[in-house]
Length: 635
Image (cartoon, rainbow, N blue to C red; front, top):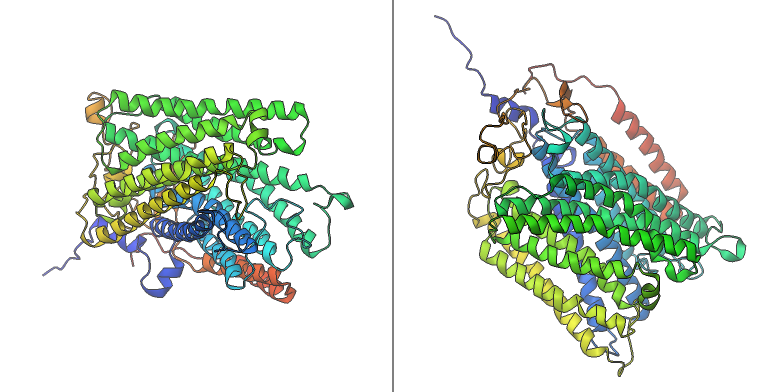
């Protein structure tokens, strides 16, 4: 009598290979891009809520004249923490969360190209935020504004540890953004599914690709600026001291040469999300795909040539202001191309007004208003009139909330079924949208008129009789209505996780690859690697009945943690890439960086040195040669 071994099904073999280890070890050691993406999203939303609480304090203080909720010093600190949190620890990381989760699914891969670096980018993001908010517990919150203009950041004007937390915290966060950007770039150029040439990628991928290049080019300027600031405060250098031969304007040039590209870093992926979402709900491909992709890249490039329009009032020579004013006008062209493509897609399609589409439509309205209020400040004469007024605050919030937050909410409603397997409630979603849209308009549009009426930014109170009180009251009321919208979203998430309708693989009838796998996806994403034949793999039959078809049943690659390696331009398969197992090294490396930062901010050089020794040991352990599981091992 012969006995045979029952073959293990392919899906089960792949699950064993790719699943995260159970227990506490798996929590800290996982390199699964989906787990990391979810952590990015949840952590970013926590920072959004912290920034929102800080904003609520500011708006209550300004609701009417003579309020005494916050002292001037406390107002400065809360204002600074609000700006830092929303701009640096929410706006870009939340988009990284979507990219981390969705990219391999969109590209037909099983993981990001550098899984351990991906884990490191999250842990450094989390720990840099913990480091920043340690300043709150110590009563040493940064207090010179999120822009930190010299010489107000010097030790004479901001004693204690306040601006040390600022400088070191931003350098720490820069590690996360830089590592993440490298990972995104390697992923896009090496791990796309066979056949997914550059002209077949979703626009969302183009957006994150462009911002990844921008991060690598822009972050060094901020790192240098913060290093100079720390040295001025702790080592007696005078980089920003005009009396000693330095220059306060040096900080502004360094900061804004980073800061303006950062605007597009937090906008372009959001625009890409909308570009991929609108075709799904209009039941037709995006109009002008090549032009939108080109507009995305050109916006990222032009964004490096407009930083001086933040500095028109500093005495910059007229020749320079003329150049940067012209550049500020030119950069509107690619944005207009994108808006035209969205509107044309809706005009020629059959729009279905589900909640994601409502947020996308609201995004377009706010994008146009924010763009117009921004381009007028590119005019030198107009900028001189409104600089440092609430008009600029209005524009900033239309960009960072109107463009970023509305796109993020659209993304949550669109991809939540893919991430969780459950639909968000549609009725709650509509309540969520209208509370946010109406609250935003009531709360932030009057800031334009406040600025035109002469109300300066960065003031903690104002005298009665200036005509500002009723408008500030409207701003405060609108802000709290907007906050109710955010609360409705959180209620929707909690409710839907427990009782939401089951989603299925493709509840929206969407065209891109992430909807070809179950919801939520298995640890290995694709049971078989797809071979892509078009830009819309799941719509091929209806769009081009006679065209070649995408093969969703490609190679299995089940000998280990394997994903295909393809060429950069045409995505031709050229090798099989072996992905690393779960590991604690990324968490350990981020922890040693946190120790170094605490040592630097406290002036405890022995602690910083101990952290540096630990960092060196961790790097050695990270790169120490290891033996992979033998091919075919599935345990």
